[in-house]
Image 1 (cartoon, helix red, strand yellow):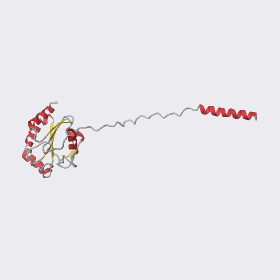
Image 2 (tube, helix red, strand yellow):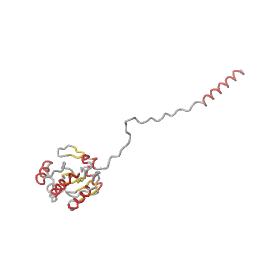
Image 3 (cartoon, rainbow, N blue to C red):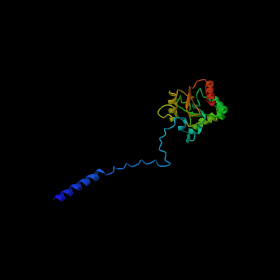
Image 4 (cartoon, helix red, strand yellow):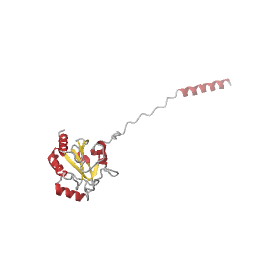
Length: 200
C-alpha cells in the first residue's frame, strides 16, 4: 500500500511538472503582401481630368486628354445677346492653341431657351456664322437636378449658380479652376488672364 501511494504521488508530480513546462503557443508570423498587388488606397484627383463628357455623337470623351493645357470652359447659346463672343473665342483659340490653349464649348438651353435645336443645328450655326474650330460638346444643363457633374465641380471651386450664357471658367495646366468670369465681364481682361496662365 505504501509503495502504491508513493508511486501515485510521483506520477502526479511528473504530470504537474510536464504541464508547467509546456512551451507557449507560437503566434503565426504576419504574411507579407502578395507580390505585384498594390493595396494602397489612392484618393481621386481633384482636377478636371477626372470627368468625361459627351461629344456631339453621344460618345464619351475623357477630359484627361487635355492634361497640361490651359482650358476655358464656356456654356454657350446660339440666340443670346452674348453669342457674338464666339468671334473672340475663335480668335483666341487660333492665336493660342499652339501654346496649349483649348476652349471647351458646352451649349446650354437653360437661359431664356436661347440654345434651341439639337447638336447638329447648334454646331452648324456656329461653324457657318463664326467658323469655330474648338471642341464643342453635347448640350447640357449647368444648374439644377440634371446638371452636368463637371459643372457641379466647377461651381464647387468658384461658388454660385451659373447666371447666364457665356459664363467662363479658366483652368490651369494642372487641371485646377483658377478663375470664373460672368457673361458680361470684359473680354479684354479674360484674354489677359488666359495669357497670364499660358506664361506660367
